[in-house]
Image (cartoon, rainbow, N blue to C red):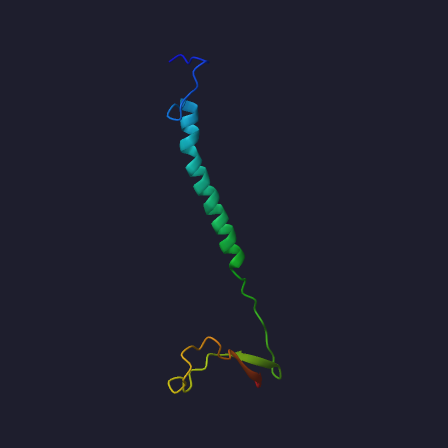
Length: 91
C-alpha cells in the first residue's frame, strides 16, 4: 500500500512496525512491573540475625498476653504490651 504524504493517518491506521511496538509494550511493562515488585518485596524481607546470649544477660521477652482476655472489656488487643519486663538468662 502506497501512503499519500498529504493524507494524515487516522487513529485506526497503523503500520506494521507501529503495531508490533504497540503489542510489545504491555509485555515490557509487565516485566518491568514484576522486577519492581520483586525489588520492593526483597527490600521488605529482613535478614535473620543470629543473636548469641550468654548466662547473666538481661533480655526482654516478646509475648502476647492471653491471660484473662475473656474478662476484659476492651474489644481490641492491638494496644496490649508485647515486651515484658527484663529477665535474666540463667543457663
